[in-house]
Structures are given as C-alpha cells and as structure tokens.
Image (cartoon, rainbow, N blue to C red; front, top):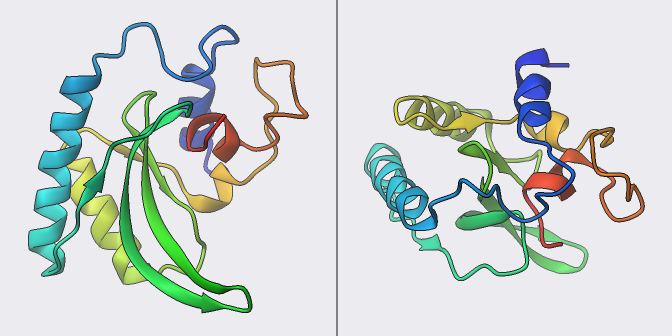
Amino acid sequence: MNMDNIALLRQWDHPNEWERPTSLIRAELLASIESVVEKLSTKAKSEFAVKDDIEDASFCAEVILGQKKTSLGLYEQRLIFSNFGKMVTVNDPDIPRDTIKLIKETLEGDGFYYIDFEIAESEYDGAIEDKDRIRTWFNRFFDYL
C-alpha cells in the first residue's frame, strides 16, 4: 500500500467536511484543473473536456478518458478531481498503464496528487463515523454523497 497516498487521504479527512473543505476556493481549483487538462490533452494528442457541473459530491470535476464495453453496456473511464487537497484518481483499474503514467507526469507538474486506484478503492477507516455511507476512500473523496 502506498503510504504517501494514505497519509494524504488522512490529512484531508475531517469529520465535519463532507463535500469540501471550508478553505476551498472553487474557481481557483477549477482554473487549475482546466490548465492541467489542457496540458494532458496536448501530451496525449487527444481533446479532453472538463465536466464541472458536479453537485452533492466530494469531487468538483471529471474528465472522460474513454469507454469500455461491459456486459451492461459502455462504461466511462474517468479522471476524477477531488474537492480536497488537489487529489485525483481514476474510476477504473483497466485504464492502460501508459495513460496512467502520462496522467501522473502531467499532474505532478501542476501540484496535483494522483491517488492510485487500488488505494482509493481500499476500505475507508477515517474520521467520519458513518461507515455505511462511506465505505472506501473513493467514496470519501471522489464520489457523490
């Protein structure tokens, strides 16, 4: 388990701040996200768009990286930007390694922190007591509440 990821998750985990930290300046965070996604688009030679009309969630924006077929239909592979600590993760372990590597390289240059999918999906054992509602670190920082 990547202890740096766990330490960062714990650092931002406050029981009274479910959706966003009180210190969040949303417009500044979204401007940073737009900038880093533009750089990612250039490096990947693909046009990515930021979706930021997110409400009732612990994340503020997402980017569709691609789709994959499942038995239930098409599944969107997403890059998800938390409201907390400039943390970012993906929602699918099957995103190609070279794509993840490119994402990490791009994010690090702009002060964002990539949280490995396996860490995000690990059991939540943080400060919020409602473990029925918050079961994983992904639920805590990268999901609708």
